[in-house]
Image (tube, helix red, strand yellow):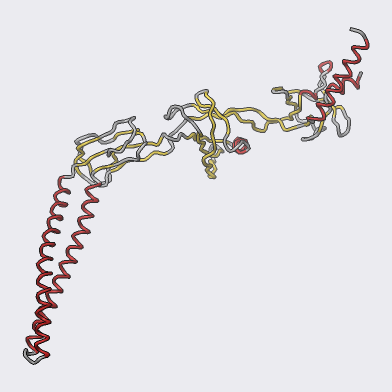
Length: 344
């Protein structure tokens, strides 16, 4: 290669370096370290299914691991409450017949009273007969109203009994999964007896305990951020943060939720979230490191001073150096190629 060609290539490289430096300043930053938060999936919520009535279990329609559908979970023998409902229904029918009879009698006595009142006004009937007809009519009307109230009370009782009968069929939230079955078929249960546990696995969540630095790092991510579940890429988001501080672990409890997840719906799936948290030292671009004769240095744009540095590690085009009082966070550096050319 001729000397002219060499000089031409050197000039081009220097020009490209200067252009790159103008486009993307090389600055001192805070050192960070990459860690991975891990957790395991849980159900979104879990409840205990209990009985509101006592009696004998005559049918159980679901087993552990099955998804709740429209059918009731437990069915309790409704025989005795059914008798009460039937008896009340018949009593209401009997009162309906009584009311028809009384209504007919009230109408008759009303006409009789009007007739006696007309005769009294024409001096053809005594006041005693008129008052007797009025009293009989009023008493019949009061009895009629009393029976109507009695019927209304029986109607309320019928609704109450029907509600109690309905509670002999114990339902669980549709779409939830049975995780524990406590009571089996043919067992006798009492009021408020726990029957089973069901959980909502339609939306999986991941509980985590994180430090303040880890929480701040997660907050800096987008509203929905990338993570992995069983080594498959997924997206996640923060559901809630418990502000209560755990004095023993010195951590905050948070819950993450999965977004747009279509995989298996169960607990125990391994969740991983890589994040960056502050670390000791400073972070400088590798392009700013002058590393001649194993003597790493950087040159600052602010003062033009060459500062020796101690390299602790490097990754992704950046170098982690030990804390240096001669450098400030955010300070711009010269590219190493420029310094090397100037030194020559």
